[in-house]
Length: 219
Image (cartoon, rainbow, N blue to C red; front, side):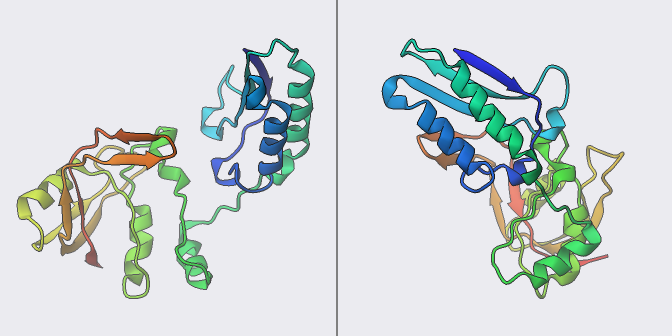
């Protein structure tokens, strides 16, 4: 197995392997290390929240052909390094978010809430996004996650079709997340057992009970 570290941190919001700037690098990687010749290569683009020593981006090649991989790996690493300034993500402040969504002609609009990403170590209980969207409930429909075990338990106790009111969010991260007072109707309940579906795998999750709660107003 061959490994080449690259001193580069990339935002996942601009690192899709299906579009530029990363797509041509992935195409070059597959061309240089064809699987039908016993080579299996991948590129690990470490995200900014993993910025600690000795973690870096890297090219990893598993080889069964016996040939030297170093030169090809270095060429691809230099190609990626040359594109480093093309990996840009335009972030929005919460106050400007809804206006940008309303101006967009495309639907649906995918919002990356970087400040509350569980995969980056956050708790997932920040109600900021919900706070931004609720005043526009008559104009926009949205689906978003919010971790709050106690509120989910109350929803299960109330049942589908029942009204529910209370504070949601800020249940774990009390330093950066504030709870939000909401009221609405319980629309759907689950036991939290979901199956991730994709190419080559179906993996059940161990999530806890959940609910959908279309809130009608905010106080």
